[in-house]
Length: 176
Length: 181
Image (cartoon, rainbow over all chains, first blue to last red; front, top):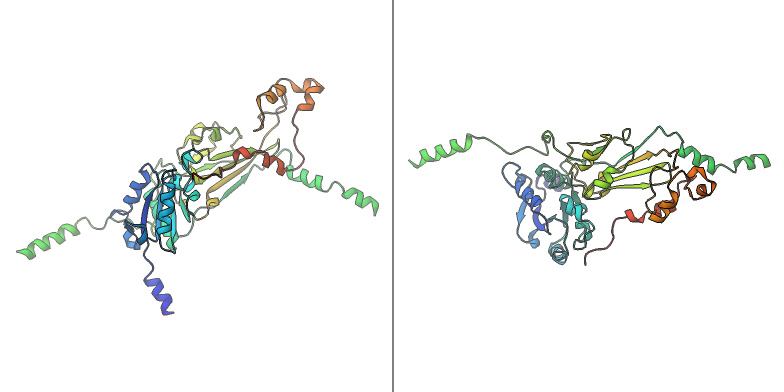
C-alpha cells in the first residue's frame, strides 16, 4: 500500500538523451522547444542529459544514416536498462521519404528497437509531449487503425466466395 | 534598499503570470489549416491511385486482390503530412485532418486501409494494369479485346477467390528488409 502510494507520488523521472541520427534539425528544434517554459516538460520530471549513460529514454530523431548507424547502436548499448526509445518525427518512426535510400538504414526501428513512435514532419511540440505522457501513462492512446470498405459492391465477392466454397454441397444433398 | 529591489523583482515576475500550457491535461487544438493525419473518404474514392503515385514517402500502397477489388493501404509511420495526396485527389476524397496526437507504441495503429470496388471497363476489359505487367504484355492487351476470340484468351479475368498468390506476387510493395550495415 505504502509502496503503491510512494510509486504514485514519486514516479520515476525520465532522463532523456537526445540522439540525432542524421535529422534535418526540424525535430531537434521541436525537442528543444518542449523544454522551454511554454511547453515545460520538466514538470513531468523530464530532463535533457548529455550522456546516454545517464539516460532512461533515447529521443531518436532522423532516419538512421549509414555513418551514424554504429554510433546509434553504441549509444543504445551504453544506456542502462530499463530503457525506452522514442522515434521522434517521420524519419525515425518509419524512415520518412528516405526509407529505402541506399545510405539510410530506413528508420530508427532498423537500428535499435523503437518503443514509441511520434510521426510528423516535424511533430508538433504537443505531439511530442503527448508521446512522452503516453509513455508515462498520463494520457490514453488516441490512434487506432482505420479499416473501411465500399459497401455498394455490384458483385458481392464475399457471397461469391461462399458460393464457391459451398459448390459441392449440392452433391452431398443428392447423395443422402 | 535591497528589500525594495527584491519586492520589485517579485512584482515584475508575477506580472506576466504562468505561461506554461497545461497541455496533456487540457486540450490544445491545432491551429486552423494545420495539416495533420490524412483521412480517406471511402465513399468518394475511385481508386485512381494518384495519391500513391504522388506520395513522396511512398507510404500509400495500392494493390489489387483480384480484378474487382483494389486495396489501398496507408502507413502513417513515415507520412510527412505534406498534403500532396489531398492536393492531387480528383474526387477530394482525402482531407488533412487536424489530428496530431498520433504517438503510439504500435506501428499498426496509424494505418488506414480501404477496400475499393473497381469496375471492369466494357471496352478493354480492364481499366488499370496489374502491377507486374511488363511492356510486352501490355502491347498484347491493348485495343478492342472482345473483338477477337484469340485476344480474349490473354485477357485477365476476375478470380473466383481471394488468392494469396496474388498478394505474394506484389512483392514490389513490401517494405525493404535490408539494414544499412
